[in-house]
Length: 153
Image (tube, rainbow, N blue to C red):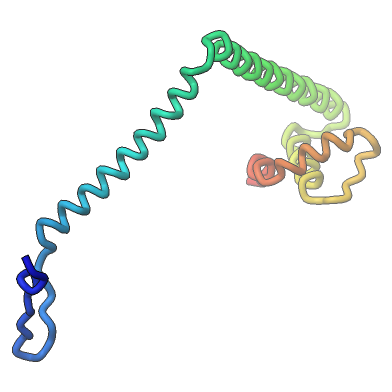
């Protein structure tokens, strides 16, 4: 078979423009589908390799990692409970101190929000040693999230 037998010469349109084929031929479609199947196969192979890597570990190691994750989750859960408890206790202290002075609950909340925004938005906030530098650094790492929480309504 010669190269000349595979060539076709397109006939020009009456206006002189080159005609555009209506649809790709079956060979092009088959090639595209083959490429797509190959990409899917490679992705599936990568997943299988990842699973095999996990399964190659001794069961004791897999379970130890799982137990460690459970311990970390329990620690964060305990920390969250401690934080909520401290917040409730500090709210009570604030209300108890505000009542004899005639300060309403709304005013206490407004002051708390203002102070929170001041800590979040003033870089050189001097809290007279009541907050450790590590705590201020932790707050600084999460400022974007905290600003959403303490947004004035």
